Length: 138
Image 1 (tube, rainbow, N blue to C red):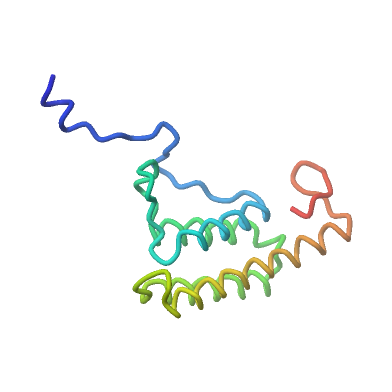
Image 2: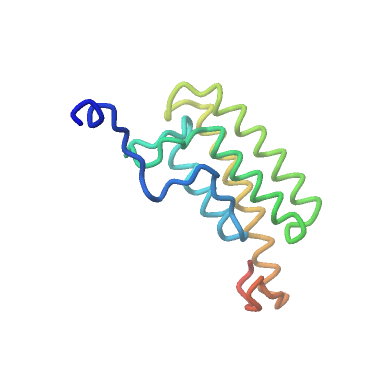
């Protein structure tokens, strides 16, 4: 029994082997905010999310962008994916949070956020409904 306890690795009940993919435009904005806080290495310091990484963070972002492609429109989607790729490349080169590459990567993530915010504002002002039939901008 003691040997089993020594080899025990805590796994949070809220972790999932499949990463959560944002389901709405507002959730992509949440993902971007989280990424900016965890850049440039995207590691979880609490231990609750051991699978959090640069790769998983950008997988979630890009998958969410792909899922919302129709709402974003082809031009905005293509621009957001391009900015995401550039940001990821910068974070891969960034040695720490204070580096110029980290600041530039976060600026690109903020640019994606501004694109999504403009789409949400347009959807709201146009009275377009979300997946639940409400006018929220999602």
